[in-house]
Image (cartoon, rainbow, N blue to C red):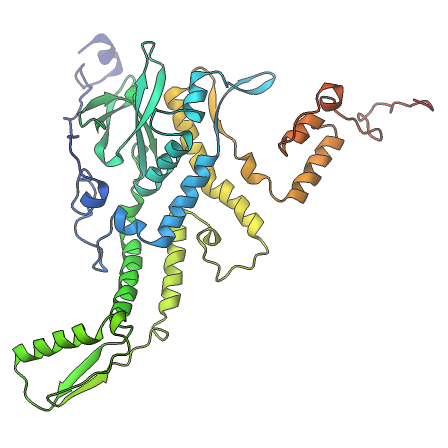
Length: 425
């Protein structure tokens, strides 16, 4: 025991940093294949199918149109918004456009992907797996020069705790070349989704397996219904005694002759005294349409997407769509913007520099509202002419005309006498 340990009153040995063994191994299967059987998610009880009897994994969940659209709209809109690297000083916030970190996030993250593609897969991993991981390639001066996305199911985040320095992270990861090992936090960039331990995001598909299972099972029911000619179940009965083997043959003959859309309208010829009795079954009475609508709303809740953005318009009035779109940026995308920007700042930013998303293009609203708002700022002396023109992607005027702030002549500083003008000036 060292002197500092003695003074702290610690009973722990001096070498308190204990790291777990390596978990990651090369050749981990895709999450769509290994989700139900465990895979690397050995700590989460996902064994077996959902209670509806269907398999729930990434592939089957994405087969639902509402899920595909929800992930597409969230990841696509997120990828549209630039992530600026900025510095703060007494004169305001300045974008560090010439800094390599700015180019890394807004130009070329790696040789294989564009900025949009990289940021789209980042958000898709957060939505489908709960975590995004990227391997950080660095130059000889330890500056990040490339980000390579890693399979989120091929990375295991681990922690180490020291009473003096606190908590630190390291990762067991499988790289795209098939090699695996243990990496320090500087080598792996992690963006964790909503978390219960602050270290690893929750997997939405795993935790909402039953809700997704209901939607998948309902879709399978509709597919089976139409595959069987859209007819309710039929009972074939006879007053004659029919052996079990012959009953099975009759059943198979009936299915092969009269089920499926290709056999729709085919006349049935019954022998051996058979009678066909259709079961009283009505999808309208069973509220199939209402059930599917509610399942779409559940998916919208799961991903945090306003229903109208995934084309659920049964209750839409179109009187507040603009307000809902504003809420989508603030309440649904806003946390994702902050999560990614803060994670990038924690991993890469130097000094007091920060990463900031700029969603201003998403908040512009209609043309008339934008024009009236910018005109008010221009006339009040808050915005210059060239600044106003840039909001409509117009070329600057330049000179004193474009870079002069107007001052309303009918206003002045409180407590001071208003300036007078002489005729002719």
